[in-house]
Image 1 (spheres, rainbow, N blue to C red):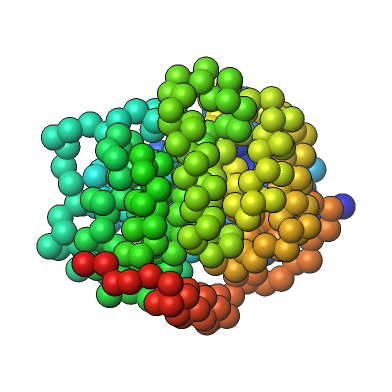
Image 2: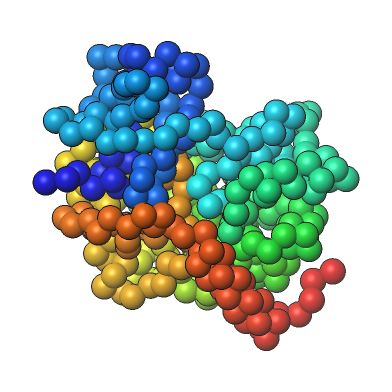
Length: 359
């Protein structure tokens, strides 16, 4: 039985990859691309750790798992040196950190802390010209603006407004915001009105007592739940994302959270922090539950693409747990671009119908 590519990706992002012979790979994270169109960003690990091993044979790379070998391609992540602290590419998405601190390997504990003051900010005047080279290298269909460390009333979204407007004006992409929950619901309405298509709030874990063990901020837990439930009344169905981190609570509680959010039309985004490891069997059960529950509630995931550091629900809808239909170039660039354009136009019409212009 051929191992599904999604399983290799899940193992890679949760455990890393042994790189005993690929010495140059060990210096920094790399993107691994499989023929089936699946790709992922990983950090190398020590030779004794991990189930996956990257070998180089006669100039070609192979990913070894148990008794199987998969031909893969290796590439550097897309980035611009002077923007490395602000802009990170991940699959079909571009993550922009206007307040700095850009890190694709997100730590749920570290990023609950308030943002530091007096650190460099992204230059609004040169922003568009500086990121244009990235769009020439890859067809991104979603740009996520990230400001998760804000303790301000608006949850950090107000500072993103000028950048959101610039992206909307210069690039044909969906706009997402990954921010802290605001203290007033009106900020969620405002966020949608200024052009954000997808809103993303990180809850960390669903069980409140375990959340408090990791964060200690009872009010933020309550604000996040309130923000998610209000956002689904404002944003289109499936465009509200709840960040959950596997391993921060018992698996039964995470499954309960998955069922609760999806029943409300909210999409859980499961992330993995290696600091809180889960056995592979439990990880599989979580993703299987996520895939089955989304299918049961018939939620459209066309607006959520693939990411290099996360196994997204959109990927799970194409890569089932028991059977994989191998398709060359699974995420066909042309069809994906046309679909993304149609979704943007639909969201734009919806927004024009229900909100007034925001100055």
